[in-house]
Amino acid sequence: FFGIIIRMFTETGAQHHVPHLHAYYQDHKATFRIDTAEILAGLLPRRQQRLVEAWIELYRPELLENWNLAEAGKPLNTVPPLRRED
Image (tube, rainbow, N blue to C red):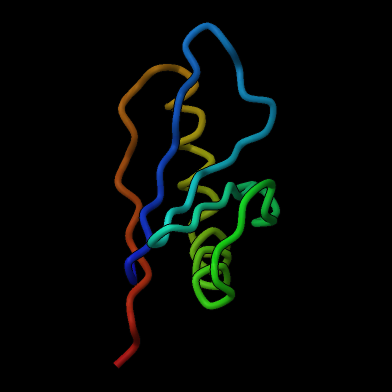
């Protein structure tokens, strides 16, 4: 959404310690906690950071469900993107 790419990765043979996702925008990347929407690592431009934070807030239950699916090695569900209001 808005040029931002979101990814979740699984670690074969290892467990991530906190549910998180990776956000990419142009040459920037950041890792966000799902439960708090805070940045764990990296940096995005302020506008894109706020968009990702808002998206996490809106879809936290779906993202946590996808986290659990990823940890179980199962396919993830689609989470809707943010959309502009008309």
